[in-house]
Length: 416
Image (cartoon, rainbow, N blue to C red; front, side, top):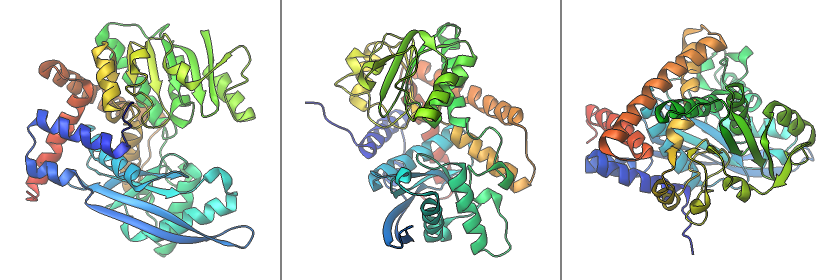
């Protein structure tokens, strides 16, 4: 029987393993094994029928040694504090890895946004930001979008926070908002762009061509759909995509732009003309060059990893591979690009959005993407060199690089 690893268990296991390789000070490790601050809030929201419903939300500050807290906000019916804690830890590591002057945090509300009317969703967003308002600010904690949240929800949150502060306007207080309110060009595609960069740089080090690369994307949401479209533009062949309802497969390749239009009309990938229906499980085991898990945690486990036939796995989701599953993949010679490297585009471009907001000066999408490309190439190259020199996985190399920078900041502050 396979052991299921929760997101928090996976994050702690990765932290402990990387700490040994990095020779991390035990006091620093102890500090990082628990969040510095955990906020649990309950707040009322009036529903359209006049009733009042009580919601529970979270905001976790894992570590602020490197700077103000940065991390997204998730709206999901099965959100848990342990998940938010794990995601906050990963954000600490992700921000450090990318050289950003930011600590790691995460927020969430237990709710199903799809079941709420527009008015109810807006009231929920405003109530949540009021509940955590003392934490928020461009030099304290600047929440962004994540699962179940988007440009619209973050715009409502920014407006509510600014209304609470009188005439003060602070576009750097919330990221992922509308362009007209100080959002950044390139923000919607940010995480998918990082996934595309990951595939590109991996092809470069492995001596492979992107043109004709057979790619399967598990999770055709905000991240997966952008990754598929950007890889398609580079000449890759998208042979399969999936969502919560199932998957579609076409060995000759799918046009992800057409699939995206189909999803917008029908609500799911199934039923797309000319593609065969398969299960999400079958998609993970397809014969392909690149597998991109872009949905949820723990989908590649010790139960199915031995059947994965992809040469490269790029983790677009947070924690999609359990430690046991990863060991099997690595033993098979699979090249795995870890989540903290592959899906760091959202964090990096959120940082660039904050910089633009603080300066009140905004860049074009091309300028934003060029800046992130420079950051990504440098970080990927450093991680790959560490992996080769120490003969460790790309995940451990990324963690080692990030942890050493965090340790330096912690010690510089005199915390240990």
